[in-house]
Length: 395
Image (cartoon, rainbow, N blue to C red; front, side, top):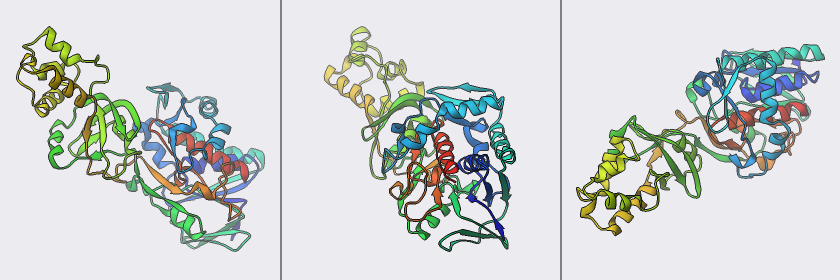
């Protein structure tokens, strides 16, 4: 039987950050993961370059049943703090669009950085052991200490940090194990669902699948939430950053709206009719949209062959539809293609400062396991760093 100050379940972003933080505070820490290598989800992120944070990080860019919960951890460990760590390790980076920061080289640099930070624990009298490649057999609590059993080996600690993520990307070994543990210890779970995920189309809207591969900058809407980025038509429906963003807010059975002409002037179709009455609707739309998309939308609008052959009222209606084209997704591509999970361990049962369960002293939940989900673009990594740091400082 091995004894530690803390056991961390999960060797991903949040788990490794918690381990490095606690270890450098002189704590003896054991990190366990059923995967055969640490940081596997980090390695595939950002096309292999890891979108490791976003300089625009703010609490209002996260979804949660309690929108205030993330403020404490995010305020105490910011994007600038993580960037300083990246730079201290000599990792070159660049800003893409909308505040997204990526490694110039490989996402592996971030994993190696976190492992180096874990190794620094020895300088502070701490220790971080990482045990990989075997699933947990059991997790129990005797009132004072947590005990884990894996592959016949047992370990105990007064603190247990659950950083096993959510069920998104199951091919990477992701499961809902954190939710099972939460329920085991009497904590509530907000119903999880796939987020940052492509949406699928059925019925009459399957004709848009013929546009597979066509992308266009749009404003996508789910309810009152809007995002301006690229939308991509796929062989199953809709994807691209704008769609992934609204998917986190979309609920099955609800429509989404797309403004295909966000930069068009008011009454632009009517103005085009005045200037070129013989212009076809397809060519008019083609001044704002990719040709294939313009052709498909023009067909759906069913306008006459020339703009001059229709009324201003009909053109105004067409403008309105193009500015808020309604789609009715019949589903999403599920956890297999979801980048993250909305929902998770209820924040009502956790301390926002330490991520500790209010009714089970010593039990912490961090990262994607918690009901805090960020926008696309590095926000979820920043939540992993901040929540992992918060738990590590409490050990």
